[in-house]
Length: 72
Image 1 (cartoon, helix red, strand yellow):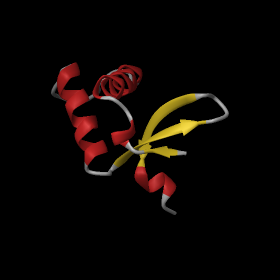
Image 2: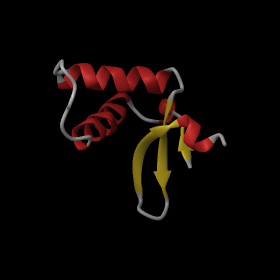
Image 3: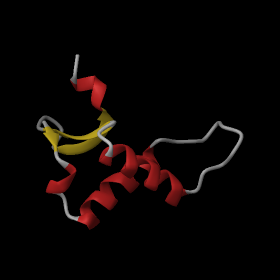
C-alpha cells in the first residue's frame, strides 16, 4: 500500500528516510556524499513523486521504492 508522504509527521518521515539511507550500504562513486545530503536527495525524490513510501502488511514495515515499480 502506498502511503502519501503528507500522512507522516515531519519527524516520522525523517526517521523513515534516514533508516532507508543507512540501509543502502557503501558508496562506490568517486565523490563521497554526506548522510545529510543523501537524506535531502531521498526526500526531494519523494516530494517529486519519483519515490514512494510503501507499507507492507505482510512485514508490518515501511519502505521507500521507485514509483515505477507500482505503475506497470
